Image 1 (cartoon, one colour):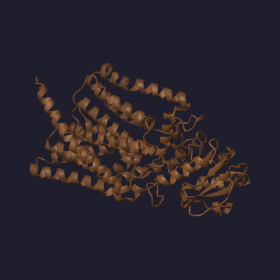
Image 2 (cartoon, one colour):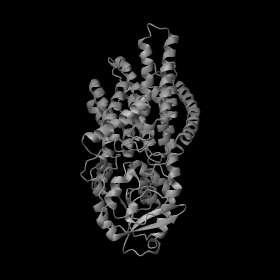
Image 3 (cartoon, rainbow, N blue to C red):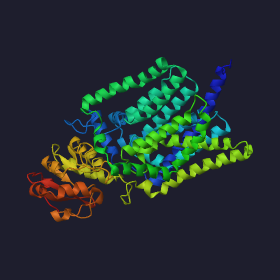
Image 4 (spheres, rainbow, N blue to C red):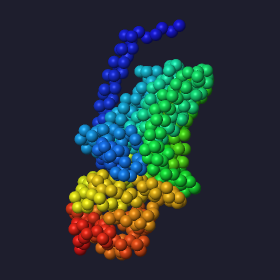
Length: 549
């Protein structure tokens, strides 16, 4: 019978590990901040402000809604909306709060890396150091990881919770825990943060089921594990279904599609991610799978299953348009762990033919190659611009000051009951606080459910209905996404579209004869640019009457 470690040894080991984490987290925080500033100049995505608007309405007692009287679920990050709403309630600025929470979440991921590595290799061993240090460095020099740490959305929190769930699952399987619950809780939090956390749950549930069958424990641990996740998640899902009236979030209907072009877009997105960051090196993990064949404990097999299923899921969802592979960042830590561990396994399989020193050198060299590939992605055009907009700023980037000025001008000059139909529905509606008709459908159930071909445009930008926008009779229509260099005062000024990214929706509105029969162009000088609006003819608000020439 194996003797259990003494309490003194356990305490000493825990203290040593804590002392190891402190410098790791300090260095990580500095590296992430510097990398973010140098590589992407503090990128903030406009879409983050959609979540911020829901959070503010929640904090103000209106509820998690886009605007009063309209229950549409135009977000897919419930947990993030709650967290930002809580900080807003206490007076925090949402940008500062989201960045602070994002940094904390990424530091949580960095703290989990050595813990996860210890499920693959003995703690403090040479191999553990290679896996832990290699993965940590690869993440810190990966521009995608640093960008999404501070971009304002839930990506870093979701990535942390996914790694926490996988690490907890590995630990439960390695120690053959009879009452596993930690992984279920982590998966629950991940699924509340993003609904596609259910995909991760499905993969882990599969491996839990296989393990339970092998141990003949289906009626105990596995059933309880399902209950730990399923019961509270079912309560949440039933609440949101009854509150919003839809089985899925509005963005699911907006972005879902079928057809060759749709799936090709998703496949290109995953392909570019795999090639830019050499994620195919995770295939080194198959060497580890060979070692796991005759054991019950199969962490790498589970991880490779998750990587494969997640990539298929992203392909089936049509990919994404934002820079640096937002939808694939959550699996980066697991991909690096598997690749680093696989590099060691390859040298182990060759160990009988080479000396230990050479074996270590090969392992370190392979780990270094993985780190270099992570760093190389910083300058990739496909990583910066997945859809090929060919623009200087990163897609979705916002000038908070300029966009904020537009929103504040609207709030100060447009009556609070007026509706503005617009395309960029992030920072401007957040600051304007006006009723807003989202012409791209993120926050509009009619547009989101249009049965039209999708896949030719960027994800989430395929659908539009100019006739619907005009029949809604908003007092103001704004067909741009920022200030412009010149005023637009005639119908001809709106042809061709202002921006090729906006061509479908702008054309659908501006080429409709109803527009020019019932709306007039108005150009307002704001700072050094022009805010070009289309105002309904019966609107007599002073600020929206005078045309600037």
